[in-house]
Image (tube, rainbow, N blue to C red; front, side, top):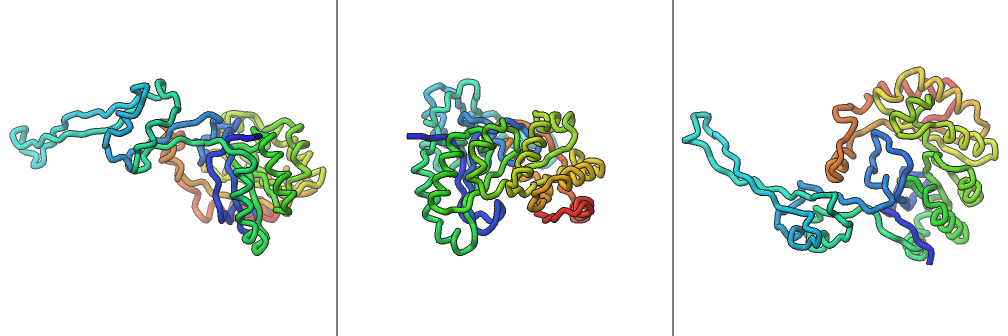
Length: 320
């Protein structure tokens, strides 16, 4: 039975296309954007998330791990509560869980006894049937609101067989379909799916290819060309632009984005999305450094000004 890997399935979504939707988040992405708000989605392989704030320090995971990759570290700390000297200091024992990720084999044994939910693994296998059972339960909400299903990620085009099968299954049920994509894929993948996609939510991150590679890990020529081809063929596309301070919010990039989008024949509109740092906690849980520490979200005025630049090219712009 055909299957693939997803890391989440969110019901009652209202920000991933028209109406009330189910958003299916695929694992795997060829990009590594500095601001990525789903870093657990970047790998097709399972990845451990450990949230220290939820941990009870019970040691159950230490005992469960067959690879001895987890340890409970204890050390003494001395604090001078009165600032008078060591004779008045208080001895405290500090504990923390440490995971040697190089030893972890992703067996998931450690999560079975983690009752606080401090440990979890991103991604799980799903079959077409399993996904469709959950999707079909929401059909009354789709019909009432004009909603449907959006396939996101990660990058859903990295699993074209799973994506194509789910799109066709939704088409057979007359469910509106959307694909949220970076556009970084071989055109053959778009050819495989585009007849079954009602709406593309297409990311536009930066117009300069060198800069694009620096902040996302890949160049943008394929992305721009795929968007041109989709638009020329009449595919419905809503362009999503994440507004990242110091990266793509300068007037030059906004002007070039506006000119490029205005030259395309079929653009439904533009969604301008202001940066936020909510995902920073996820990077900590993954044991990774967050590249944009200290970056502040754009102000309302900055987002409004960016929207005005894009609107000056005749584009319909919505601020998210």
